[in-house]
Length: 251
Image 1 (tube, rainbow, N blue to C red):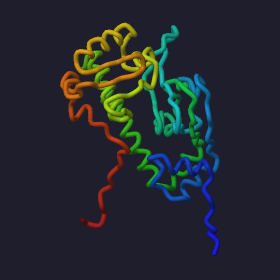
Image 2 (image 1 turned 180 degrees about the vertical axis):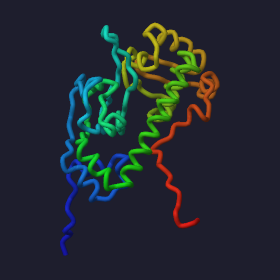
Image 3 (image 1 turned 135 degrees about the horizontal axis):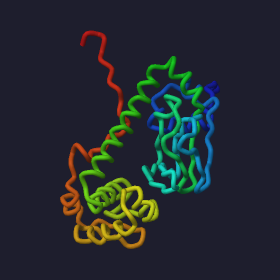
Image 4 (image 1 turned 90 degrees about the vertical axis):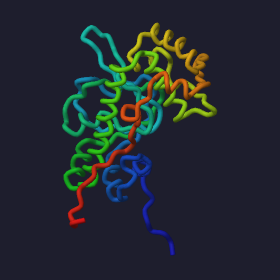
């Protein structure tokens, strides 16, 4: 007997691969995918600018995206560098308010665009999806609080040390990794000037870090952790928080 189950569309399959949507039924994924678009963007493409009204929920599947803010005089500051898989600026989409940041691709990127009217329509009848998006927003909020504490409580060299530890732990092999962005962009993301970034690299050589060009090797992870004073509350990152609903069965 032949299998009559329909093969999911490429968009529905892409949704199923994302942590946020992976647990949902084929029917929910089909509804969200119905008018969604899987697009490939070139490097340095503007996705939207601060002040633009949201039309889509953006899901970064490949490449990287820079979120930035600018002064009226044109000075730009990088607020976040996103890597896959990430849903970004969800709050603006869910409340249909103008974006507070601009988004631009840093390299060729694949992004899933979910139409806002389709998403909001599904939220009205799907409480599980509502709770999942609420959990994702909670994760992003807690990440933002950690970033603020990191900026206020650590020196430039300590912030760079934390970044390099995470980079090597997440992507490195044999205590080494390759910087995913150029140093000027990383300096901006970490709240440094290029000059202070260079001084921070020089300082970290005394604490078990070897940076040569774009390649990083941590020679003494314990020394580096002690230098940046890793804190369990500040530095333990959560992934895919879920909203816990109290049981109504009396247990």
